[in-house]
Amino acid sequence: MRRPLSPPSALPYMPGMSANSSNAAIDRIFEDFEVLDDWEDRYKYVIDLGRELPPFPDSARTAANKVQGCVSQVWLQSSSNGGADPVISFIGDSDAHIVRGLVAIVLALFSGRHASEIAGLDAESVLKRLGLDEHLTPQRANGLRSMIARIRREAAEALAA
Image (cartoon, rainbow, N blue to C red; front, side, top):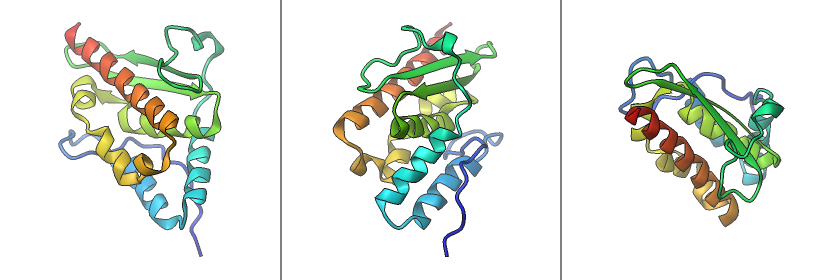
């Protein structure tokens, strides 16, 4: 019997991250992926993750927040607490169900971290560990890379400011 899946709500931990970071979110995603027997079930879980995203404000659906390089429409908006190494929070959305779930995974990896942590996080290895690199269409994989590049660029800009 499979345990019920519920999307994570805490921030993930990655090796080298600060002790204040939590590993609950990404660990839960990994655990849930291991429980799921096939990729059809994993895709359904990713879609469920996307359904749990908070509503994205219509006012934020602007050209400036749109992620370039995604076939689907994807929007990311950031906010930070300022300072030399600010904590950056992200919200996001997509018009495609599976991509919205990928947005949720990306936000679980990056949102609420210091800009320096974002810059040093090896998101590609996390996504590879989840198996996403092998099971996404080339267009979705390119879109995922575009989201990550956008988040890293915003972190670099925050550090340079």
